Image (cartoon, chains in turn purple, red):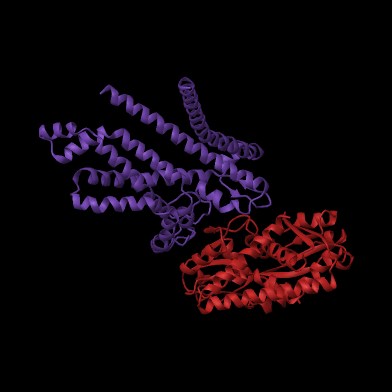
Length: 311
Length: 301
């Protein structure tokens, strides 16, 4: 009897183990399945238009008139807008974000940090549509005043009412702040205490220590913060669709512009046939961009780990 | 079958809402309840009528056509199926020309078209039954002193030739051209009627009527176009060629920025199936007109 029961319980044990293993594997494959099916779906839906319209014409065409009698589907300006918009917002957002992270991790008094830290965390939780609304109600009217001042006597400028590239870049810059701050801060905090102590002991000032010791040591974390910021900026749609004006133009500061994301969002509702397929192609382009960013992120992180190991 | 389930669901929600409203003690709740009760009475009345006059009316009505008429077609289909439960109305949205083609080919009973039928289409047997008129209003922000534009002036504004309001009799203020995204029915209609297809230069291409209203209302010098029914105090609706955008003027055919919503049939209505005839008859009843007005359109007499 006893023998039997032991064997029985062993059996149950191994069954449970096997079942658990199967459940874990299934769950893991679920994520993989999602990625693979999305990739396949995007490729299947995005590539036909590339060949129907012509790869060069889509990617490097400058005229976007999808519903015209002789439709043209050039998304060059849209791609350019997404790239320049993202780069500009990174250029504005990253210095502010990294300096805020330094403030939080190093220089802030406990009281101040206790005030700033939750504020940053709150910023991360605000839905993007709220950023867009604020941009629409506050930023756009300001930009319009500036636009009227600058282009008062211009014959050629088309007034956009403040819905322009600058508004979109500013909104994006604010939106990537929480990502950049949080990741930079934790990477700064994970720099070994000895580095800082050694630097200070050698007579370096606090500022010298931060910029010459702490920041280089936290480099890989800050780079990954930037890359994640790029990912957030390039993938954002809701907020910038409200502030950018959504007309397809060369991405000049005061032009109304359309990003890759807003191009899909704004026209998917009524698009049909080839127009719809081209929107999928835009999705594919965006997908490719984000893939490239992700791959480079993993590369950078791996490199960072290696160089850390060498130290 | 699907539609019926949906209807049942809607009815359940309506009932639940009525019950919930009944729980409240505010005036609005009371009002809601009355409306629900009225609706119920109306429904019963309609059902009684159906039983008496067309009690054995069963069949299907297939519609296809204009995407601009989607709201109207869906509203008509839903409401008509409530009053004549035996008839199933389906609607597809393939575009005006495709809709008329389908009705001529006989694959659908009604071809929805948001433009007048072409002579060639009429020769092929399609009959133009105008069921409603869609009006488009041109709106500017409240600070604008311009109250009237000619067709030519409007076209020049939208093609980018006119850049300042001073050129059309207003103050020296830049024109901010606001429009809808490519594919929008309102944009199609606007550009088609104004004959500025594919030549418009938009500074803002917004993807909803509400966004256009908000942008125009908040931007000095902005001009936009929206369906007539959404006009409110936040914007000024311009008169065009000295005709104000009112339902009366549109019915009289004086306001040029309007288009007919046609439900084309293959041959006269009298030659259609009973279900189709009943649908057209219902559209001219008070109830049918109320449905047309509920989606922001102007009824025809």
